Image (cartoon, rainbow, N blue to C red; front, side, top):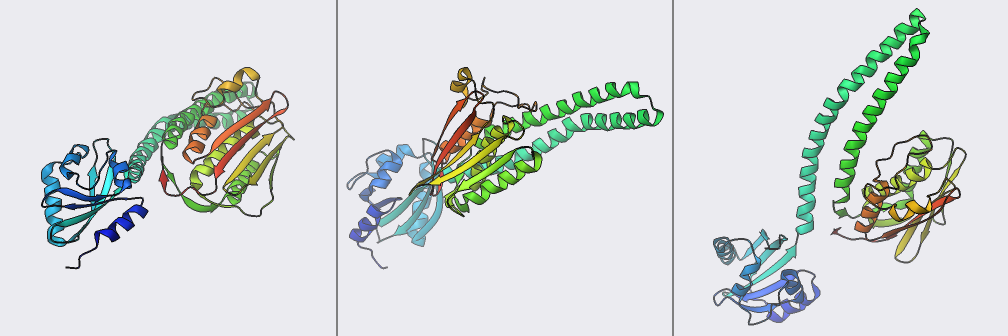
Length: 355
């Protein structure tokens, strides 16, 4: 067996963000524990410490721990052992047999990854349930709309135009009912979305913003939406899906409260470590009494759009939640009948999975 110098392990341990522990499994005494391990277990661990005294932080029973140790002694290497701490965090443990009585453990906090995987699993189950509910709740109203359209066709064929207003009123009411059903589901999904964890990838922020603008203009050609940036591309490391959702929500709000032929400007600026996305409109602005409530959940500042678009009162609440998760901040300024500016500041690099 090749024996490792404890000095080498200590050098690696002091550089690593993971917890490193070397202990004598025969005497059950810690020979070395790095600072990362002490921080991970929220308990000071040092040479001479009894590993058994750390037992109260782990949920797993003694037999499970003894089995893992026996497996490590026999195989000399074990990996992907997961354990749950009593504060409900999860750790992954790799173990190496350094000598005939020394074990080295590398302990990594995997709580965020576990919770993310749990979310993905829950999301799949929730998606199936929502599809079933949407199908059930919308099939009746949509069938009614179809029947009303058939009645309209019959009315036109028989030239009984005095009944048209009645039919169109029923269609309008029925359509509003469908919209309310969809908004109810979207509200719940937005709430769940804000609780998930940020997964970092490399993407072009300007390209994402352009996609949002193109989609907005496809549905609202009466307004101008301008993107202003000194750069042709802006590659950042963050959650591209959450970034898209943030930009979409803020831009949607700006368009909704800007009159026809109005202008919405999206201005992107960068510094060494951060970048800002400012969405500025010349719309109706936010009245002073509503401004303190703009980022609240189910906000009292919720208002219908200029075309009567119904609000679920969650847009900017979700924006603030997601921007905070992504390590940034969001501010706004507004003057009634002049316009509103929302400024999102985000780090250019946000590595790993974060809460």
